[in-house]
Length: 514
Image 1 (cartoon, rainbow, N blue to C red):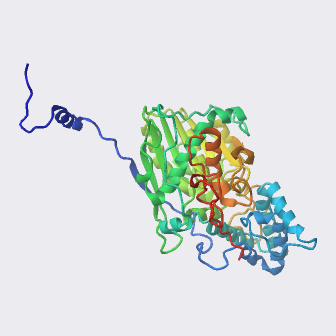
Image 2 (image 1 turned 90 degrees about the vertical axis):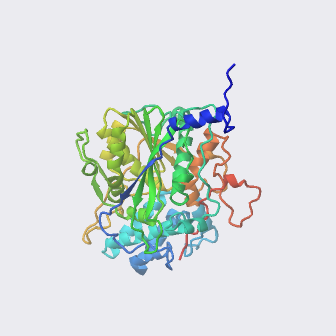
Image 3 (image 1 turned 90 degrees about the horizontal axis):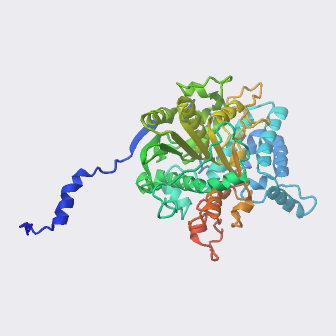
């Protein structure tokens, strides 16, 4: 019998492996593109400064003058403005009926949808600035002040990573979705309702799609961490049977001169290993610059940004001007990526600002590649388009928009009530800009996420927005995942037996009055 012998003493199996290794193709690294974010115009007011004194809701009334401010404050209190204050008591409330008056206001906030507060802000700013003072521009000043108070006081918008980690202790690191170990390729199941998307989505369909909602929000949460923790921190592969192929980074001009976040990952493109499906993930707001895009309330033509559409719409769909610039930055690259792929189905998902931009991306792809099926899953989307756009979404996409009943973001954004006007409103008129609800609503009630510590309440602004969706998805569709963000961190620091895995990392709230 022939004996194999090597003077080096290296075992045969190791030598063979070393010879074969060069024949194995390494996993290709994701392509990264850096895309410049332009603005429709210079920001209409000075930069948001979270260190400035007076960044609070009371100061938002100052542009209306003393009489207008008093009248507007009464309207806000009557609508339950304590909800906006994250639980702070409203000073100056009418307590002529005794101490029970303020308690009654709080009771109303808990019972009523948060949209009442948003509507009251718009109405009172408009009434006081136009009727009493004759200055519509004051509406925009006050609304921008409100935005400043929410963004700065909410402690989840940041300009440097040190700032994020300092204000949000315990922020969760990216983690893989918890799936059965036997799953070789995750299935993103969404029943095809293209052309006939009901609102709300029936419960039986929601139940059948629940695991997909869980997977998508876990991935969205991961991408949200990437600007500070780096894309290398993201799970690889993101889900079994899928590979990240691209990152699209936004290059922004920071709000502050010493701001550190000038280039951040905004879109992650993931391809199924069989090449038949693409997943496009769009993160939520991170920088103050992105938050300020909301101050551009005017509308622009969707098809002026999307070129090469195969749809001949009867009317031109209109979208939010500031967010349209995000679409303008990323869509050419996404169109090229989809065109180069073999995908027969594209799933687009986003959170908050990312949901609104995801709707633009999804409709752009659907009208450009009419032979492909496009699914859209929007978590907590902000109103960002008119009725014509919404109708076109239903006609061409398979749409789901998830909204928690105590999350004010899906109810924010201009609708048809007064005061939601463009920042460049002429001083002699008040121009109403109409934005409408997302179709395909998946309605999430407080009962569906159980009994967390103050998350299912309009008094807790950011936990309801940032943590309720993961809590709902884990508790209802993947209870094996030990991290659910279902508890609000106690202010006193005493955990009282609460698991750290259940604490909402965004529940440090300091929405100031003054």
